[in-house]
Image 1: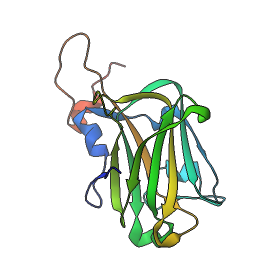
Image 2: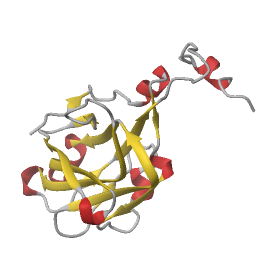
Image 3: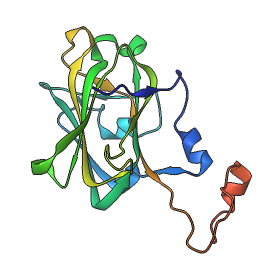
Image 4: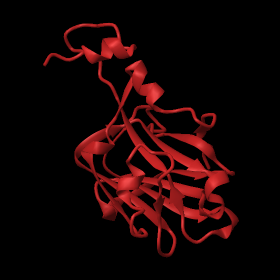
Length: 186
């Protein structure tokens, strides 16, 4: 079992985006859930608000399905979990699966989380080549919760792809907010 690289509580994966090495691509995907309570679905999972969350409403495993329209390179998943707020609703064991569709998903990571508090960074690099994976679909399965809880809470999920180097030549990375405002031609 892999251990996720954990950041201190409050550490935001958007800091990685500011370095210019990755970008968030969750908005390019179609998201679906195995179940949810009314008002606690995909919109809350993706709203950039750490106070809102997805709450499952059914039997385990609880699933988050992320489907891309074309094969997409994915480097990392970031999940926000908060044991102090969610207690028995907090995932303790998750599985990350990838594939072309629901019928050929293969598990690439299984994580045990002990009272997580903050962002959990899950690397999606190919074990043999150490390159980011290329996939049509990612599935996050909550296999168990703390204190044998039935339903689960997930507060946010982010999906990151590596940023390609420019084919024209090497340019310095845009690292400041002011510089990033002008990095594209309108």
